[in-house]
Amino acid sequence: MVRVVVAGGTGGMSNKSPKEIITAIIESGKHTLTVWTRSANSSKHNLPGVTYEQVNYDDKDDMVKKLQGVHSVLCFISQPTVQIALVDACIAAGVKRYAPNEWAARSNSGSFAYHEKDQVHEYLQEVNRKEKVLEYSLFQPGLFTNYLSAPIQSASYCPIWTNQWDIANRRAIVPAERDWQLSTTTIQDLGKVVAEALAYTGEWPEIGGITGTKTSSSEIIKTAEKIRVLTPELPLGPFKIDEVSTENLRAGKLGASWNPLLPEFETTDPNYDRVKYSEYVVAQIILGGLDGAWSTSDEWNKLLPHLKLTTVEEFLLRYWGDKK
Ligand SMILES: NC(=O)c1ccc[n+]([C@@H]2O[C@H](COP(=O)([O-])OP(=O)(O)OC[C@H]3O[C@@H](n4cnc5c(N)ncnc54)[C@H](OP(=O)(O)O)[C@@H]3O)[C@@H](O)[C@H]2O)c1
Image (cartoon, rainbow, N blue to C red):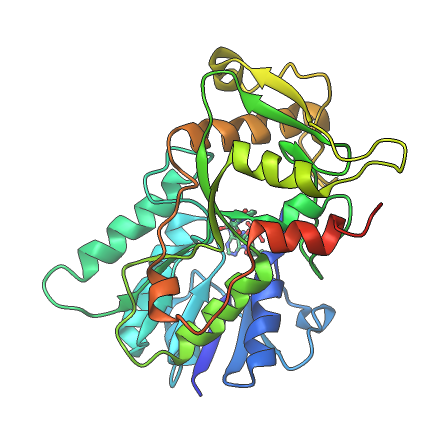
């Protein structure tokens, strides 16, 4: 059993995946867990079995004091300045292990604002250059398989939305250029891997790839075509495919016959346009896919071979297999 702090574990407006991971850690019964939040009203957060603690990431002494006796820190905060301050506090407090805010694609993927993740990785390499002062692992699960259940919620907290594969309506958006490879992992399996990794007695791998299924966009479509019956009148059949040019993808546009739609979230940006933003996000996912961003590795699969991770086919059968 180890003492764990989860910085930014309250989950965010886009995702809330931290809560899924925290739940898996609590359910493992193996660790004690404190979530750090900037919020003065930590009583508004109420995951059972979790202690919430208010923290000021600008106050190193405060962080070092709070980290006494803590074995591992998991981070879900994107801002590199905050993460770097947290890494420094971990080193000063003698924390053994740190998981930076990765939880997605390969390093140097060029996608979204993921260069921030690479900045923190570089800092972790830098502080450990002369001697190892903080063990760390970049948990990289690829794309969450859970989006393939949309609009059915396949997660307790993380909002599930339709991305480029709309299994419900048997259609998909693909790049005109070529097929793309990826790894997919369910959020719940990511949680199980993290819970086991916290108890792992060997050294953490620097790159901590996790792969539920190694697949490709076309294989996901083929598998779904075997499973998704639209109505009794429309039995199994091919998906409607919209091909998008690389030019459109680079411009953050899809120009498809339908638009994926991200969940609503609160924003103060007067120019925010939900449809355009959703197009941009999916265009980024596909572009990243063409560059291999989502083709993560499988270090944690190899280190934890007893964990059986959900495959795309098992997931699709669970959510769509009996919807005839
Ligand atoms: N693999 C996939 O398919 C996939 C999909 C979506 C997301 N992800 C990954 O999941 C991770 C978490 O995403 P998320 O949307 O839940 O996170 P988020 O909203 O960006 O932030 C998580 C928490 O960090 C704290 N925070 C935010 N800004 C901060 C700041 N400036 N200083 C200090 N704390 C701050 C907030 O907690 P308090 O306000 O309580 O302090 C917030 O609840 C990301 O790394 C993302 O890339 C992966």
